[in-house]
Image (tube, helix red, strand yellow):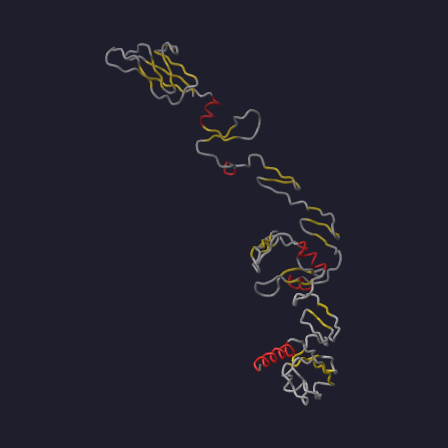
Amino acid sequence: MKKLFLLLSLILASIYGFGQATPAMVVRVAGVNTAFGINIAVGTTVIDASNGKQYVCTIATAAACSLSYMSYANFVSDAGGSVTAVTGTGPIVSSGGSTPAISINAATTGSAGSMSAADKTKLDGISGTNTGDQTITLTGPVTGSGTGSFATTITDKAITLAKQADMATGSFVYRKTAGSGAPEIQTLATVKTDLGLTGTNSGDQTITLTGGVTGSGTGSFAATVVTNANLTGPITSVGNATTITAKAVTLGMQADIATASIMGRTTAGTGAQEVLSVAAVKTMLGQTTSAVYNAEASADALISPWTIITLAGTPVTISVLLNGMTLKLTNQYTIATTTLTIIIPVYKYDQIQVIYSY
């Protein structure tokens, strides 16, 4: 019976000790240093009336203690507490307090931030794929190619006057400083000094010409060429008109000609002299070359055919006589270039005469 009673007691204690939920206690204190006044059990919620924060007891604490006992070692902050202050980390900005205004700064070239609508439009308008450093190739007045930073070259003759730096009215560009270097802009006074000019020149000046050309005026004006003194000798003149004196041009004054050349004219019509070759002159003169050949043989032996070789030139006209009798071409002799062949009987002491022009 004793064992049965003891078993029933344990069952009842379990039911009442562990089977029912115990309501959590809530204690309110004036501040973190205010004593509780009652023992605080584990699970008890303690509210700090000064700021509304809530703490839950994790280690049973005596009535004489406060929230700050052992630096809040016996309590943890209750997540159900109210927000008292909110801060932001750039580019996020908070106005602070329990109901802050949260905003984000605009992005700059030096710091992150929000993107404007205009920037978004520009970004959307970029076409193609750009990943990492892209190779850029410049054309036109400035050329070059590379990624990131790269060397460029200005094309020769590409810098027009309009592209150069402005300069003051009445200025010149040249270098006065000793040694090679950049061109410099100089004033009119400096230019006059450097050129050794004196006096004052403002506006149109009256200019008077003397000597071979005379005239006077400002800006543009008429000038007169003074008549030259008359020339004498091979060339004479009256005023500015010149004349070559008759028979004054010597052979030495004429242009050089080649050896064995003759001055004349073969071109039809009247005109300038021409340098002619000997052959051209012979043709013009219808030159006739005569040659006499004697047959040679022993006794009265027949020596035909008798061949005459190498005339002075290819005949233009030719006449062949045998003992004064004119021979007929083809029937009695033949001619091939400069070779003449007699094709009729020829005897000792016969005389052959060839008259030809070439």
